[in-house]
Every structure is written in structure tokens, then in C-alpha cells.
Length: 107
Image 1 (spheres, rainbow, N blue to C red):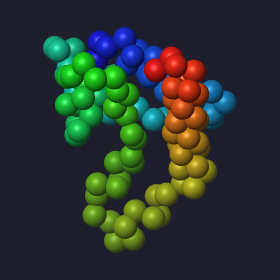
Image 2: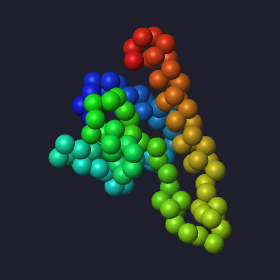
Image 3: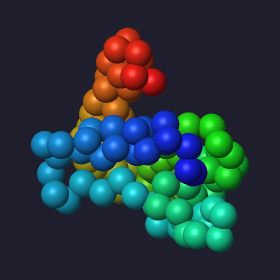
């Protein structure tokens, strides 16, 4: 959305990818239209409501498409531990940077 704080949150999210493998992808495959524009930050689900608001928000929590499919082994055969750890570390770096900005009075 167009709240100024969202710009900061989006940049912190992108910064959290620093040092990750080039193959790591955490992006929307089906973006929501927000104010007539396909958003790169908001997709289906609860985040799309936030995207249409003025509340500062990031709106991306990636999840593999296979989690939505019924598979005999529950999808475990598709789990890539290294990728999952890298994705979790991105979210942890984001949370750490958000906390630092908040503690500094910048959020």
C-alpha cells in the first residue's frame, strides 16, 4: 500500500535476502490487484486486505504450492531442508531488523 512505513518494511524485507543463494525465491506467484495495480507485495488471503488499507504491512509469507496439494506422503518428499532453513533465516533477519528499527524509534 502507499503508507510511508510500508516502503520501509518492504526495503527491510528485501535487505533480509542479503547473502542468500541466488536460487532462493520468496515471491508472489498470484499477486492481488490493489487500487487497480497488480501488487508485488500482496497476494490472496489476509494480506490482501491489509494491502488495501493504510496500515503499514509487508504481506508476504511464502509457502510452497505443494503444501496445498493432497499427496500420499504429505509433501515430505518435496521438502528441501536447505531451502527451508534459508527462507526461515530471511524471516529471522527481517524480524531482527524490524526490532532494531523499532528500538531506534524509526518505526
